[in-house]
Length: 149
Image (cartoon, rainbow, N blue to C red):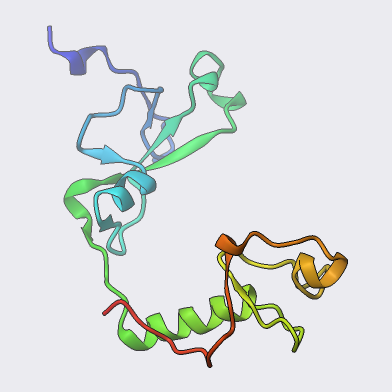
């Protein structure tokens, strides 16, 4: 007996997506979007071809399952596009705006996004909490964007 004979595939009869229980989708043929991304692929403009029910919903009736994952066909997937230098530069400037303290006396760029909407500055400028020197770049020189490519 083949393993495919034991797989439960549900079809609602209304032309909907096939639905697989947890750990029963064909291995290597249907994958989630995260698995596509990990393999360096993208859906390539194609939509999902099936649904995957979560582990908790595998034992519930179909109408009660609210945790579904979309499954994509690996055969239709295409390689991910790479960003151009202009796109990388624009992303770096956008991240710099979120990571740099706007206080003129500080102007440190941190390795994480600052709570600028709620606090308006870094924690050290806001309430004096000392920042770990490993989490920011000192503003000793004008900001120069060094792109990877």
